[in-house]
Length: 141
Image (tube, rainbow, N blue to C red; front, top):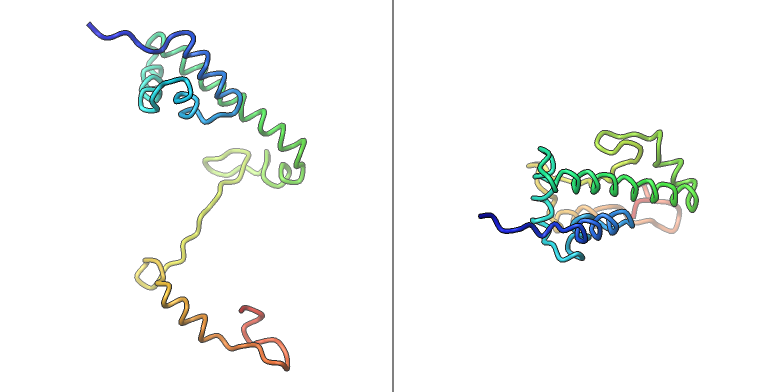
């Protein structure tokens, strides 16, 4: 006999309200006393349509969308230039309507990171600016 689920109407409502208010979904689950792994399992069970998980997964998806809409409206109101620069109309793969943060890693000849000692040696080899004018490095110091 399977044990009863912790997904009660009250827990369902609490998690959805926290997500709608802007909390990350796994944090909302933790705040409601549910482990993130249990929360993810509930969403997986909702995908094929198992009650009560189906309704829970649908409500979580809707709450995520409502939180995003609220955030986008706030950005447009409080930071219109950011909204114009990064918002709808600036679609990117995987992030429709918003740009994606990209972290660039500099790599050495073998593809790995450049050792700090090498960077320091290269920096020290740059010509210094002299009193007569800018350096030949284009102002890079």
